[in-house]
Length: 254
Image 1: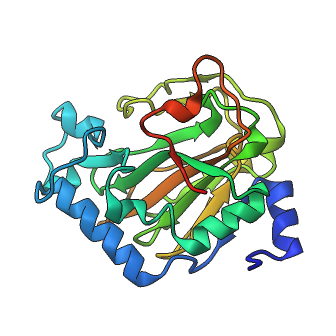
Image 2: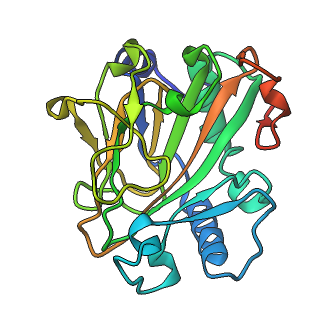
């Protein structure tokens, strides 16, 4: 089944990203959200490699969280949780990635639930995801980012620099901010005037190239911003060192 028009494919190639509205159904979103809350509230035991990351302002005692959900900014590595991993296998998501990458021989390589609570800094500086991967070539990797809750300018939606994926991997460093969450690196001297803010409703999904420069602002709303995300890689990717497919967090999707 063809998911994308020729215009959409060309837009992805030109801009480095593609937004598909309403791609993920409400029932699935509710399942992902419920499962995330269960882990945060301690009502479910996390899988062996799953991690809940506390926001740096909470960890340093600068802010007292109102609830457990106000303390967590990210859930990492949900590959071994059947409920959350259904996102990676969602037919609409998977078939779109197949069309973008031109292959059914795919692997999931990174999985996250992002939670941006109100009341903390929570910014993610402009960066390129390839900074976190050793896989190459970048054209054989695509990221997916689906809004579970509304993502607006006020709540700290994603911002991208269209066409930036056509450049090289830039130097990254910790930004000169008072509070920076763990491994939230950013490119040096970004041009903020080139940003395009991507506001999203629940179920909307952004597909983007790993060299696309993107980031997000702080949540100035009273509500949470929450999303679920993964990266897909073609089987023909290569990595320096050991076979990347042997990682415990990598899953084949054929």
